[in-house]
Image (cartoon, rainbow, N blue to C red; front, top):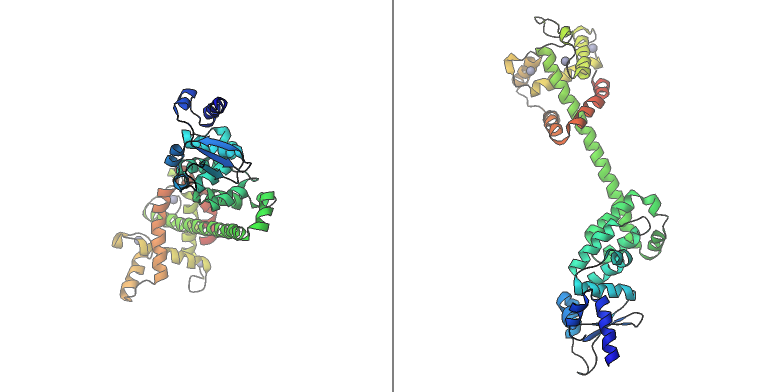
Length: 356
Ligand SMILES: [Zn+2]
Ligand SMILES: [Zn+2]
Ligand SMILES: [Zn+2]
């Protein structure tokens, strides 16, 4: 009896993660946890029950004989992992080393025995330590243990490094044993790919509208103030001032305006360059709010024509106008300054190739 007690106290010091004085203040253990390898861990039913509602249920279950010893089996994980689990129940703490070694087991135990604080820290630690080698195992566990954040993190890693993950033992095991999860992964990858495509297309569209919006600014600036060689008749060419800040767009437009003014084929003759300029002028007119004071060629004529024909712009044209107007606002809100400048630089080619 004497010997037994000493052993139990020694275990307590180590097991419960308390200082030896606190451990000595605990009453005698009144339950035993039995592990898969038939080892016994003495514990206190009141503490187990206060942390885990599942253990509380097991403890409260009526026993066959009042005198029979209380035993709680925790099976399916190594003894040391169960010790770590019990230590957490007593101290609400797990060491780095324990997490490193038994994180996967602790996640499973915290899920089964409903210990949310432990589940939370396991999820966090496992998420930080994902590797190509363990990601499929953790993914399976995250699914089983209903840990959505960890599950998503695993999915993303698998999707982004599929070539490497595909070669792991974990993946081969999964293919043989969990075809549903394999299907989930492939589906996720497919979705991720189309998400990427969708946002790439949106970015391209956005940059096109931005180019148009910049062209609109330049058009007004050329026709109002004049820029380098092109401008209103009564204004002196501004060569002395040097090119404006959007000169690559501006210059292309100037060339187009010159062409438009001198072309012999013209829009009706089927000149493509003139047609584009015509559309830009029409777009300007749709956006322009200066009415009679506007200096941009054909602005007033387009407006008049619309009034006379009493015709509303068609829906697609309206949408284009709206998108061009909002492109500028969106881009200046959502891009940091450096990126905005980059975009202007890269868009120059676009301007030239599509408009002039
Ligand atoms: Zn200019
Ligand atoms: Zn032409
Ligand atoms: Zn105008």
